[in-house]
Amino acid sequence: MAHGWAKLSRGTAGFEKLLVQTRVPLAHFMSWLVPLTELLGGLALLLGFFVTLVTIPLMVTMLVAMFTVQINYGFSAVKTIGLTPEGPVFGPPGYEINLVYLAGLLVLMINGGGAYALDHWRRSSPRSQRQ
Image (cartoon, rainbow, N blue to C red; front, side):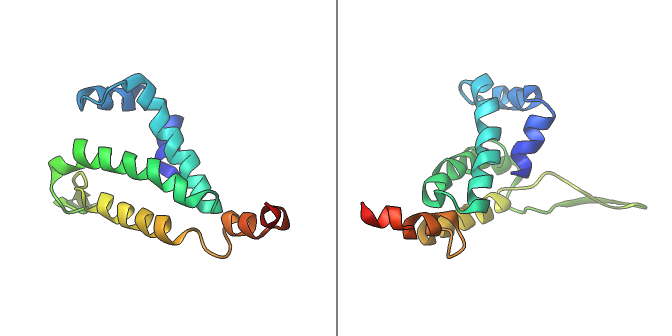
């Protein structure tokens, strides 16, 4: 959700430029679709609402990000590239963080949202049992 909100709150023009530079098709459309997917998909996961379904577009966005941007920076998610009096300076993250997110999404896809998820409540409601 934080990544989607960051893209939307700053305006999508900068993200669109990144998409054009990495040759993602339909960059203008995607500059809106991706942040909305991250924001609303993250909210759905947080609430446990249609978890199995929502993981799919989130995994797609993660794979595209990994193969168009992060793959160029190697594996490590944390790269210390310098040290200043204020503290360490970090470089861009590699694809390790994408793999962590993908693993988490895969677990959610397989196991669902759990006992406190809206999906659990939706499936166990008397109305859904009548059908």
